[in-house]
Image (cartoon, rainbow, N blue to C red):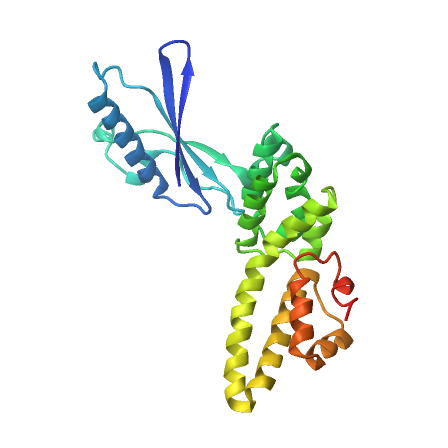
Length: 270
């Protein structure tokens, strides 16, 4: 992922910052940055009259992986051992490095919005993300819903899963209606995926055991899966109640999952 920024000081003096993002150490990142620098300067030379002097370009690499960046930042180190007489002819630059995992949370940024995004990048690939989810979402009350949706979607699609009860606790500082909408954003993809899988299972079992029976069992499994994802472990008695219910009751319960404040509230009416 490449970002380009133009920094300006005074009327004419400015420089470019090229930023590459990596989730794990990659020795080839230096070659990527070199290509970006050459491409930018070549375009500048072709488009400007006069083309000189060239603007300074700062290559910046941002690493979010939990293991830390232990690779060199010097391009010339990619060449290994080279005779001293040849070293002046090697392409050379050093890229700046921002290793998020080594920066304290308080040092990421003083801007709440930027800090929220950077903490999501910092923690999303760490196995201890569930433990720190409250820290990651500490700025939730201070940022817009769209920003929060982007952050939660990013975390939800990452390699480390977070129980919805922990998310609910981390979002306690939000207004109830706002929190319900946000939890609904996260649950909706699982509901749609589970619905499709439940229908497929129901159809498959319906062929072998009778269509009606297969549909009920498929819907029951779908519902329990969605409930476990949202609220955690389901009591055995409640699980049995779901599997003993008819399709109409199961559908009614399923429709309440997105907005229900608690597991018990889903089953209060029927």
